[in-house]
Image 1 (tube, rainbow, N blue to C red):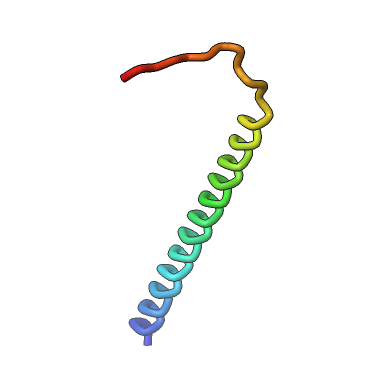
Image 2 (cartoon, rainbow, N blue to C red):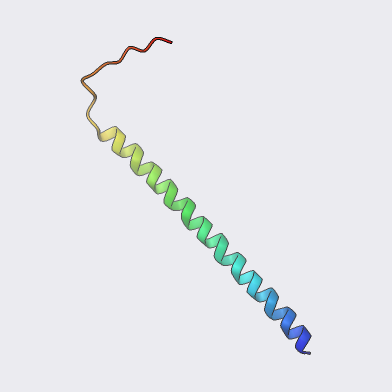
Length: 57
């Protein structure tokens, strides 16, 4: 019976670790999306540059 409890306990621990990792990854992705949106909004708020660059390849 101890072996079965040990296996079940290990499976639950692995499942909890997987859930925590998936949650952490989802939160990180959401934070990156929010930062990307904030950066886009910030660049739209910047005034246009008075300098023009002509670049020829």
